[in-house]
Image (cartoon, rainbow, N blue to C red; front, side, top):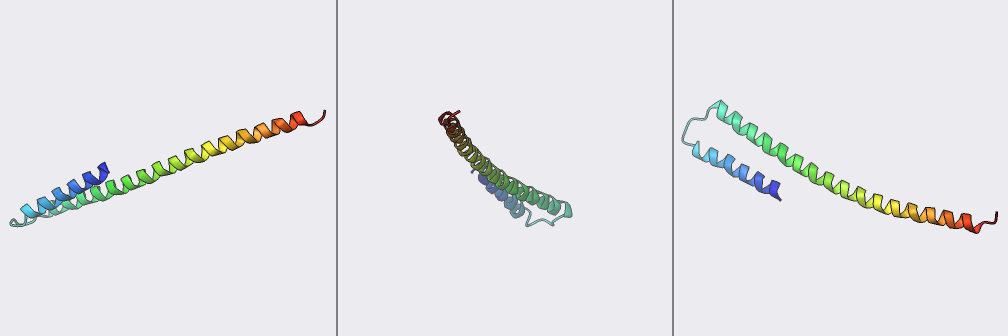
Length: 88
């Protein structure tokens, strides 16, 4: 959520800069600066999306590990019970 707000603020600042520069002649340097800013916003957006996906993957992994560990402990308990049950 915080990343989206930051991205919206950056976009507003980007467009505010363009609105104030409409009466002046554009220079290549200004245009390149806007392009770099836009590239940074895109990169930040992709990074935030990837981080969100990564956090979701970690969460799923931890749940799976928890269930696996519980299943393994039950399996070990059953093995031990069978060993005790078998005649020597």
